[in-house]
Length: 172
Image (cartoon, rainbow, N blue to C red; front, side, top):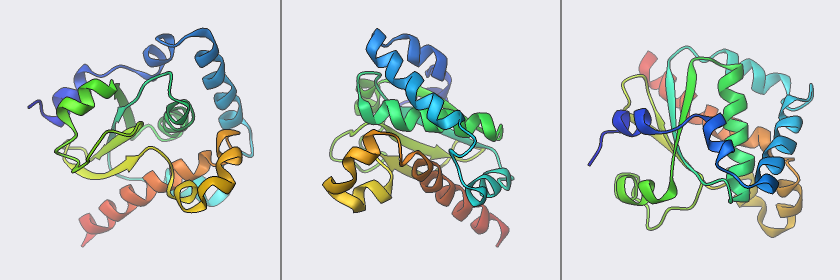
């Protein structure tokens, strides 16, 4: 079994990930990126939380370009890393995640995107699975808004909660 660090090293960048997509999949990600680049994409509190991150973190993401959840959430994670350079990401395939992450993340199956949130030493501190918690809690009624990109901030806040909890534990 490969270490998280080894998996991170063989993963690909967001740009390489996008280029593996079909034209309509690439266009979908580009639409999400336009939403993420808007001045009102994130509220002030979320941006302050993001800029307050003091440690170094790695997001090991299992994703596929054909997946609408990946198009939304991986694009949001990429924006997160551009706004906070102390966070980076690397993308592996769903198949590799099934081989390498299923047991370690204590999952019955891989729902993508799945993210192993790692600290500076590539130790697991948390995970993100498929959709933000607000979307999971909201159920089918909010699915159209989610698919339209109205919950991109929730992806960041879920990941920030994992990072902040780790930073709090490290200060104690």
